[in-house]
Image (cartoon, rainbow, N blue to C red; front, side, top):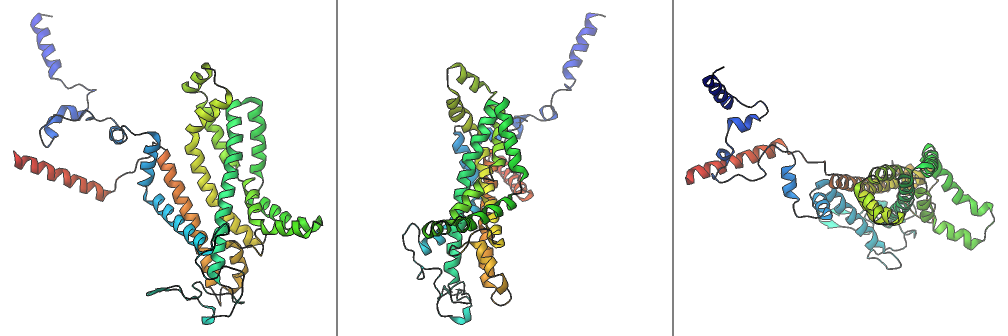
Length: 395
């Protein structure tokens, strides 16, 4: 082949499109797409995640999670709703011996039936009246009963969540970090607890708490103390059976994280197992722990209500939302407000915690990215077109 032929082939190769080059790089000049004709951004290209990287540039992990969480509309709605419910319940009847603003502080006190026991709450003009949620058949104020029930549900939720985190994280961390015989023993024990129906175990434990003082012939003071603290004991019992899901999730996280380079570096530096678990691995698993705990707390609220409704949970003189529904289920046809209000607050509390859990899950997971709606995309395209038109007019 002559030198002229080689020259012509080389020139043809330069003009021929590169099959590995993206079409956008061949068909258009990136500079021509800029409205102001300036130099393109260094992040220009087809790489995925470039925009996300620019958004979080210079932020710590906590700031990134917080920014994602507060932009989650459902989570913020759940936070606001739960905060308002807790504020209403705690300030109306008071807490820790501090009296509240509601005129009836003794929720079990009976009185004269007013307005046919119907609710006196009016939205316009707004007025609570004497009994905003109505009264029961013996004249007890339903508003005070419901507020006390909300306090009980929130207390059960928090205590159960604390015990779940304590047991689940401990078992999951030890199992995932040490593996071997420790992992086998702890996971088989976890599987044993999982196979037992939660509602049945809760019912059995609740029944034992109610009947054990009488069967053991304990003194009146001990029996009364147990019955007065029955919601707290029920929360502890629920925490002792609802930790299994968290333990398995924490174990899987520890099995993955213990093989990372920063753990090997900590071992080489002479760090103890306790320091590696608490200072290096556990902070990286906190996202899974928080999300699972919030969802478990939501399930605990419904489970406590179900147990109290079945008669195995909270007993008088204590009050819970599930117990109120159980007591007044027969009055649904004649005084339905006694049934509605506890049910409404159970739904609101459970939904609020679920929305908060969804928001935390999206905030801690860097792979989740909200897809814009068609309306948002059309608006963005219109703004880009308006910017191009303004740039051309300025030229």
